[in-house]
Structure formats: C-alpha cells, structure tokens
Amino acid sequence: MSTLFSIYKREFTSYFVTPVAYVFIVIFLFMTGIFTFYLGAFFESNQADLEPFFRFHPWLYLFLIPAISMRLWSDERKSGTIELLMTLPVSITDAVVGKFLAAWSFTAVALFLTFPMWITVNYLGDPDNTVIMASYIGSLIMAGGFLSIGSCISAFTKSQVIAFVISVVISFMFILSGFPMVLDLFQGWAPQAIVDAIASFSFLTHFTSIKKGVIDIRDIIYFSALITFWLYVNVVVIEAKKAS
Amino acid sequence: MSEAIKVQSLSKSFGPIHAVRNVSFDVSHGEVLGFLGPNGAGKSTTMKMITGFLEPTAGTVIVNGHDVLENPLAVKKSIGYLPEGAPAYGEMTVKSFLNFIADIRQLTGSNRQKRIDEVVDRINIKNVIDQSIETLSKGYKRRVGIAQAILHNPNTLILDEPTDGLDPNQKHEVRNLIKEMAQDKAIIISTHILEEVDAVCSRAIIIAAGELLFNGTPTELIAKSDRKDIDHAFRLVTTGKSEENRETAAP
Image (cartoon, rainbow over the protein chains, first blue to last red):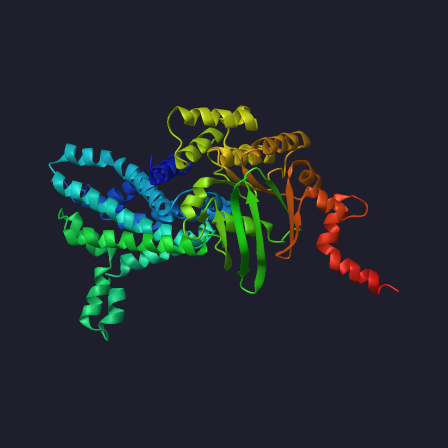
C-alpha cells in the first residue's frame, strides 16, 4: 500500500470517528434544502431542473468547506502530530495530497447524499439528467477548489479559527472576482485583458458554464490548475515551516 | 559494532538564538546513548535534526550511511522516533493507530499482525487497545508512542524522554526494554533522570546552552564528582564554570 493511500485512509476514516462528519452532513443537507426550496423557489419556478439547487452551492461551500479544511494542517500543528507525521517515511507531497483527497472524498459523500433531490425532480417532471450530472461533477470540482485553498491556509497556522476566517475571505474573493463590484475597481484604468483575466478567476463564471450542462475543458483546466497551485503552495509552506 | 549515527559539527539557530552549537558525536549499534542537559539545552532540537524534522543551520547528520539532508526518506525508514510529548492522533484507537503506522512503515503479510501483537504484548498496552488515544493516561500515551517507534523493528531508535510520566514500575519495564533492544540497536534517549543513565546507558552526553560539555561513560561521569554522586557530577559539568568562579570570588 502506498503511503499516500495510507494517509488518505487514516484521514478519511477519522472524519467518521468524530461527530464532525455527521454534523457537517446534516447541516449541509439541511442548508441545501432551505436554499433550494425557499431562496431558490424550486416549486414556484415550475421547471423540472435542479438549477435552484446548484445555484447556491458556491455560497454554501464558502462557509462549509473552510470548516472542513481548517483542521487539515492546523490540528497537526497544534497537537504536535506534525512532528510524528514528518518523521515517518512519508513525502510531504504524499501527505498533502492524501489529506486533500480524503477531505474531497468526504465532501463527495455529503454531495452524494443530496440524491433525494435528484429523485424528487425526476418524480415531479422530466428533467435533463445529463445537465444534472454535469452540475454534480462541476459542483464537486468546485468544492475541490475551495478545499485546496483551505488546506493551504490551514498549513500556515495552528489556530483553526484563523485558518477558517482567512480561508473564507480568500474563497470569497475567488467567488466575487467575476462580479461588477470587483471588476468596476479595475474597469476604469486597467487594460481589458487584465479585467478579463480577473473575471476569469471567478468560481462563479466557471461553475455557471458547467451548470448549464457543458463540461468545457477550459473549466476543468481552470479548476485543476487552481487546485494544483494551492496544493503546491501547501507543500512549500509545510516544507519551509513544519517545525515552527 | 558498526556506526549508526554520525553527527558532525551540528548547529541550529532560530534567528538570534543559538539552540545548538557545533555538536559532534557518534553512536554505534549496540550502544545506548543518554542525552542529558538542563531544560532548553538543545536536546530535543538535536534529536529533531537527527530525525530530519528540523534542518540544521550547519553541519551534517549521517544515519546508517544516509545523509539526512540528501536522503531524508531513507533515514526516516531506518529509524524509530518517539517525539517529545509522544504526540499521536487522539481520535484514533490504539489499534487503528498502530495499524496506520504499520501501513506507513509498509509492514505486510503475516509479519505485520505478528509484529503488532508482539509490540502490544511487550509494551503492555493490550488492555487499552480499543480505547481512543485521547482517553488514555499520560503513561499509556507514552507507551503507545514507544510502541509506534519500535513497530518496524528499526536498528536505530531515538527516544525523547521515553520514561517521562511513567510510574516507577512502568519506568522499570521501559528500561528493561531498552536494555534488551540495545544488543543490536543504536539507541539515543534523552532524560532528566540521572540514575537512568547509570542503569541503561553505555555512554552519556551532556549538553547545556547548545554546547557539548561531556561525552563519556556513566562511570567517567560519576568519577568527575569527588562524592561519587552522579547528580553532583551533572551539576559540576553543567554549572561548573560559574560555581568555580563563585568559589574563587568568595572572600
């Protein structure tokens, strides 16, 4: 068994031996329900699709994903287990990727448990299931983006609270970068290319296109590059200040 | 006796603080090296550098022929390490924790379960095997830490205060364990308990304020004291200069 998989297995099972997993899943399901039926006006829209369900995922992830990722490295620092982990024959990359994949799988479990929503919409109407499938994949990939930010930030501090707050702020910037309130700041003076570049960093822009049922290779590349970048920084941070 | 650990002019500074200055020593297989020194002397820092957790500011560490900076994974594979305070994943049970270590150490086949059983038996943690580590007493936690360090039967062991928090009987057991293992392993232990040095160590090193002050057998250390008392000898070595100064300065 590779060390990456050993780390993955340990991390993934550790979610379920503490109440964290259950609390998270219940809250996630509850919140998706509220957003879909009240704010999303699922029934009133009278359309057989899950757009009102997926529309709020970026906003839910904004707060819920940092709640998962904050402990990834902060906890290791705080409890001193980072010294154990880093003196076992494990490469830092394996440890970072193993932890990340475990957290990502856990969000996949939470996302999977929203399947009654999918069943409901099929019961009530005749939705385009390929669009829904694409939206699920898009949502999961976006969750990976949020997680990679959170994992990296948690490597900086032994305080989970600080990790949470900073991760939320950075994730918020990634969501907002496609919005007029951010773009207007640059519109007046910056060249159009820069404004476009900033807009293209937005999670929303990329998620919206996937949500329409089109899994564009550019969106996949965007999220893969984003995840790779943050995990790379994560490795560098652990390497440089594992003992401090 | 072959050389297991070779520490050469090792130094570590944290900003303006020199935690370890120019420390050199060797440990061979079959030797138990006692690492002594006041709190904050640089014992743990030195151990962290040997195990590859901290990077030295200067100097080299060679463990079983591998340079810790050039080939850290090979070094980490060949040693067992009990970090200060015996950190472990609190939410895991002792059993799942040892299984995790066995996974990482890539113990496979029939040898794996056999080795886990042996260690659990030897360290005497069978009765807490299904308890989560955070619910254990300090002594048990320490023993789980030792179990973790010796699980893959490494030929080099580094134990940072292995008997801290143990009751007298447990201390006795751990000392016997160390003596037993010493026949074919190179072992470094750090301790504040001086009689432990006499009881288990074949050699002792004293460092204070990051500097190596003594390197010799426990008998040689005791011989430094005219009262033949190891505590007195330790005080002479670590505070020696200032005491002499005081004596000469006194009217």
